[in-house]
Length: 145
Image (tube, rainbow, N blue to C red; front, side):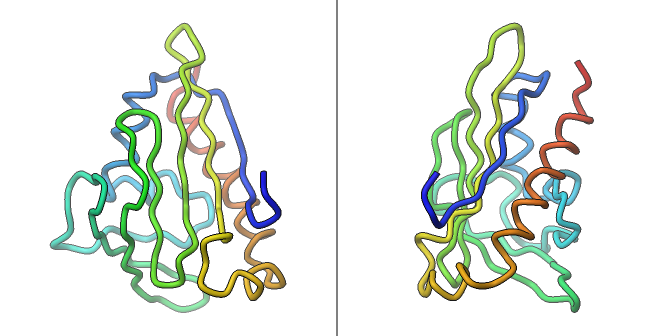
């Protein structure tokens, strides 16, 4: 991992296709989110994400707000990533691990942010690393092996 990325990886007892389908549905993001900040997909957005999709989410981090995201990386059943106005990315990668299992990696990548140095010295990398671990725990709990 680069200096401006934090990530976590788990092997989940589900196929890449099943997991990818969950992540391409913004309405399901609050079920997975371990940070507690993702509340709901806003009405009027796409039901299924693809490259270039724009989707807005209701969020809460101290106070309620909404955030508009754009899908910037997309490989069917293997990779999806989105960014918002500041340019940092949330990336999910899915690698088949045999016997109906998938190695899932979630990454918070601020190397693409407009001002990455500000994020580097903020609490967000550490906070987001903890949220990633909880998100992967939640995902694993949905598919007990």
